[in-house]
Image (cartoon, rainbow, N blue to C red; front, side, top):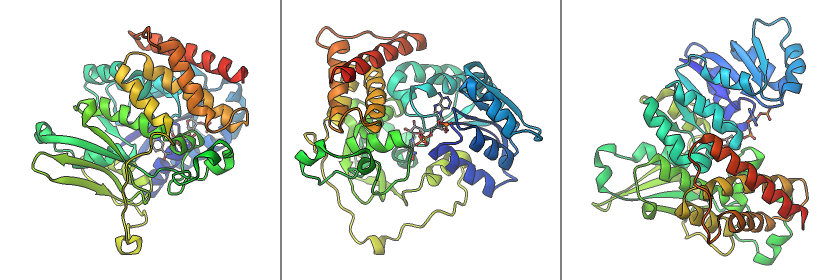
Length: 386
Ligand code: NDP
């Protein structure tokens, strides 16, 4: 399989490369893309025998070229080079860039009709309807990398779609599920970065701690599966063993379980419609003993409420939601605002740009990016005024 990985140096990207390196005869790596981390990208490109390696930041070109000296690997830098890498002929493109920055390159792969293993949830949160329209127009196969969506996809009977009552996305509840509410105002980035079950990039880890991530996933599921919004449910499940469930009209509740290791859903995409061997730790149910479930606490996790409200409003609301959250999470990580300021900042931006008057309804991707830009500026101004 000819494979391109966008976001190769990240948590998902490295998990995908782990699978590639364990199955060298199976994969032929076309392009690896990162942003800034030239040294690691070069190392991964050498290890996988990639044809081309690209960094988004033009000022990292020299570092990449130097790190690749002596290797027969093309290198490039800048937005145009990233888009060109995404367009190269490949059987599958893994979309694992973090943030709205992933939108254009992933869309480029979609437009070429490549099968896309989608990790970058921002494509669907920021621009869901437009993105899915392009998927349909190009006849692209879109496979979910996100573990909850992969779980649901694995037990979603397409032929019985009209017999589905609801789907359930599970959430660990993050590190602050039981922290006294008043203490949540004081939590530090180091505490918020300690996810109880998953090892992920910093943005999604903070989004998991606020549960914004689960809100994003509901929006993602809305665009990915042919269901109504009232058929999507969130259930807190601290053990992260059950990743997603589908409830049918006959009362059956089908679930997918597995260890919290992204290599399982990534391998599911890479081998689909078949499966492949992956050396993840096997789930030992006897050792786990109890699987518990509870309803999410909307007071403790206002970000989840905001995401669900934005989904209901539609239009540019979810674009604003994501952009404001990206800025607020970065500000929290750099110590500029507190943990509970993250949802407060997002709410202020939604109120200002998409309040009772209703916000803009982006008509194309450039329009999405301009709503995104406006939301970033509004959020930065809110943070600056603190
Ligand atoms: P990381 O922060 O670990 O990695 C992000 C990757 O994106 C890096 O390779 C980074 O390069 C690259 N990147 C960042 N900005 C740009 C840009 N402008 N152009 C090109 N490349 C860029 O993120 P994760 O791997 O955790 O997450 C990736 C995506 O997958 C996110 O959308 C996340 O929500 C989603 N996801 C992640 C899961 C996980 O387990 N981690 C689970 C489910 C979904 P560099 O290293 O050079 O900065």
